[in-house]
Image (cartoon, rainbow, N blue to C red):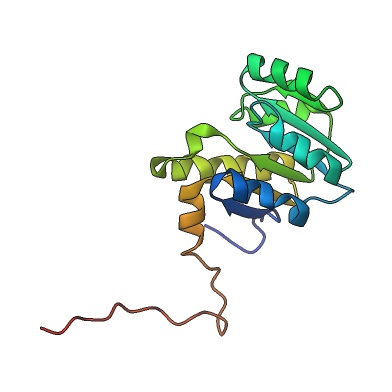
Length: 165
C-alpha cells in the first residue's frame, strides 16, 4: 500500500520526438556543471553536440562498431560500449551523472511505451539524475495527455461534443 514515506523520484522526464527535438533540448537542459550520459549514441554526433555544454559527457552504444567509429571521429570525447538495458553497468563508469540522454531505436514505436517508461524508471532509480531526455514519440504523445493531479489546480475535463442527430 502506498504512503507518503515511500521512495519518490526527483528526476524530471523530458519526452521528445525526432532527432531535431532531441538535440534542441541540449542548450536548455545541459549546463557547464553537468555530467551527461548518452545512451544510444550510435556514431557520436549528438554526444559531440552535448560536449561543449557540460563538464563531462560519455556516449554509449550497444554496438562496438559504432563506438569504434565515434572514438575515431571524436577522439576528445569518451565513448563506451553499453547495453542500454543494463542500467547498473553505467555505474561502472564511476561518474555521478546529472543528466541522461536516451536515443534507443527500439523505443521509437508505439508498442514500446511501457518499455520506455520502465527504462526511465530504472535510470532514475539507479543513477538519480536531475533529468532524463528521451527520444520516443509514443512517450511524448502519452505525456502530452497527462498531468499531475493537484486539487484546485486541475484543468477541467475536455468533453467531446455530441453531434446533432
